[in-house]
Length: 138
Image (cartoon, rainbow, N blue to C red):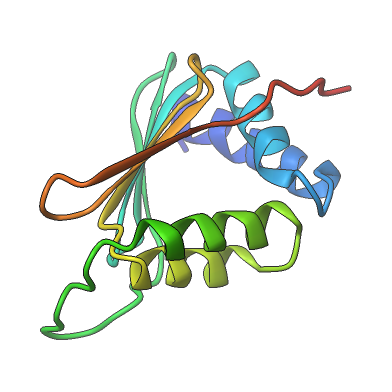
């Protein structure tokens, strides 16, 4: 295993074991930031995640949300915000969150761990940017 993969894996294990149910994303993001991750770019519906780290880039391939040819949902900011609030309240799993963002027309999202923002993007240039709070990790 390479140093970037090992570093990322250890950070994700730590965050998974200690992150709160409510407000879990800012906690995970802070753990990753402290581990040297600067950006995390998700491609939907393929569920491919690119981590840009100080040690080097790492790509992770998750289980795709769809198979074969499918129509891309129209970008729906209201549905996206609803999916975000449900997730922030700890009322959805990560796979449910990914599915809801895809159904809201998100084809990519880009987490900037330095700026503490997430940009959600549709296929026609639509974009919704949301800041997330700084948290303290013990």
